[in-house]
Length: 365
Image 1 (cartoon, rainbow, N blue to C red):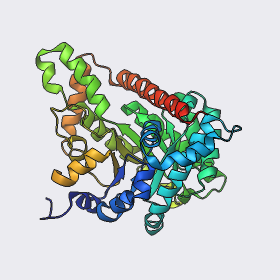
Image 2: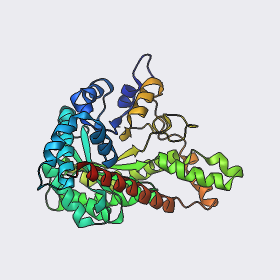
Image 3: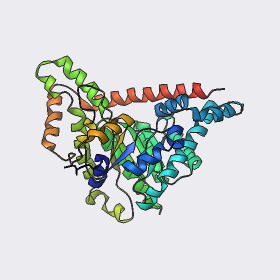
């Protein structure tokens, strides 16, 4: 139960779930809004992506002067101009969260920067870009974002083996969760084998939710009849089952020796948590997935909504049988959730590629 007059976001923190802001801009940095969210709502991290940066650079006045100067540098590419702007923002956010990072011994206080989505099918180029961006930002509380494509899995392993903290993005299925966990495990095992400092590596696995319901609901509506009753339940069931799977991947039996050497278990992160269907609660993907040792990264609107009327109580481990039954019923209806996850990953990657092209057009001379 929520305590009277207590900000429900603070109650989440007490339960053990961390809330990250799925937004970043110089407006948030320079006008003090991000610091206020850290101070008053205990926001414990920040995520960014090409769509977020396109919106920030195209709308915020705080980029204009620097962007004009960068455009006057004829030796710079459009991507180099974008990275100059983005790296400065990422550093600023990292610095605001550095006290939290230090006080929690590196458990909280991270900021995510995504490699170019154009590299999603090139493992070597992803690794190179990730290491280059880590050097450019030069902050211990940076997470390099890498998509969970087949090439991305190889890149994740290699980055972790090189001591790089990673946020794995664009996950939409239990198979993605399995593959990402094992890529991280292979990487941390390799780092351990060469005597690396395991404690300095953090990894989060970002499972996207609202898009899952959007796609599966359409398929259920096409079937009609009794299938209609299953709408709006798949994403929550997916996250609850993914959490149980992750507990197994990082159990004492599977991860104990590495944990004793300082390795951190990969943390499940709920992404795409802004409700897209107006028929559903605007805090559906927060209230239904509250549990310890997890992260929920929320857009501004969802953050505001949960602060206003969210109920903070342990729900993530509630009724696992119902989650399994949802999956079984979908399977009986011929809905392949792994195939749907791959479809959503391809679609999500295309959206980020489109945003990235818009970004480069914005920063072109």
